[in-house]
Length: 82
Length: 82
Image (tube, rainbow over all chains, first blue to last red; front, top):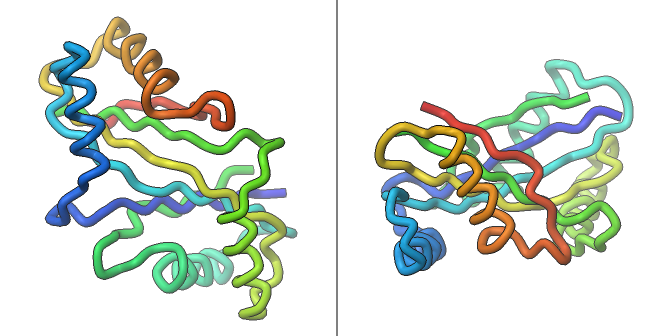
């Protein structure tokens, strides 16, 4: 069954405290080539049956209504993997 | 500056309550073609300077030591975007 991958990230202008915490940990460990870390969410939706344009449009709606908080997050990609 | 994308998902055999909650919400909304939903994490690491194999090996180590809890999660992909 195909899987639709939806990726959500915090908006660029939004503070990402978790990301900052990871970046701080990396620099304390001496790994200092990482100038920024941002953390988002990755959703895998397993679908029964073929994926067509109508389905992808539906998933775009689901992503923006349910999976992402569009006040502080962006849906950065929606892709299909077989 | 290049960005290294690290994607982490719960192991297949691990219960994913958040994923189940989203799947339940979708079916209550009448969107019933989604047989499963799994939720993971997506890390964007912005890197100062070029990304070479040694760097990718370092990121693999960081992903498995810091970004993922390898008892319950798998690092499913590490990719570079310019």
